[in-house]
Length: 104
Length: 169
Image (cartoon, rainbow over all chains, first blue to last red; front, side, top):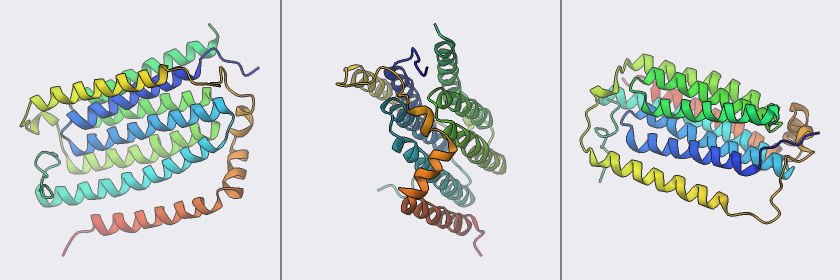
């Protein structure tokens, strides 16, 4: 009844591809907000892995973990954007190459 | 091919395409819009995995709340094109592509090693525990303390955001 033709590894490969695209974005983009969105996408791809394992192993704990990851991601997004606004107010830029005040 | 397999391939291709367009797009507003498309694709994949609650939360929280916040900040800061942000080192970009390619290869090699006892299909229980009812029961019975801790975390985030974004005198 619930049999699908898609094996677990397909979901995992999709998640790996999305994660790597997120890594490309974090490493190549210079706009701090875009870097931030790419981090959200990496979190999402890990969520996909958790939900896939949860469904295939028949264990609900994976979905509970995804719920908590989403709550933490929401808090992180709000705090991060506030920090970006504060930096923009001081330095008038969101270019991560120019924000080097904490660089040793 | 079953209808589910066709749906999976369609949604997977559109998720990867929207993610790529998001990364390659110069205009931050368009990037965010492609990201919303990506989140909707992931929500459909969650539905394929019988995780109805997670799919709805994905749309409500990610596509609804977080992305509106991002759009709001981008339009508040009035950033324009990223080409205005000048590039200092171009060789860094090449190294970044190589490194991400290595990560992708590693992940795919790791996945392709066959696991012992790896289940071949979605468990029959998956339909039962994906619903709002059973997730809620699980949250309020076994995970009550983490649930309350998350509410404190969100409160701390609200206070922190107000303090950070407030105008200094």
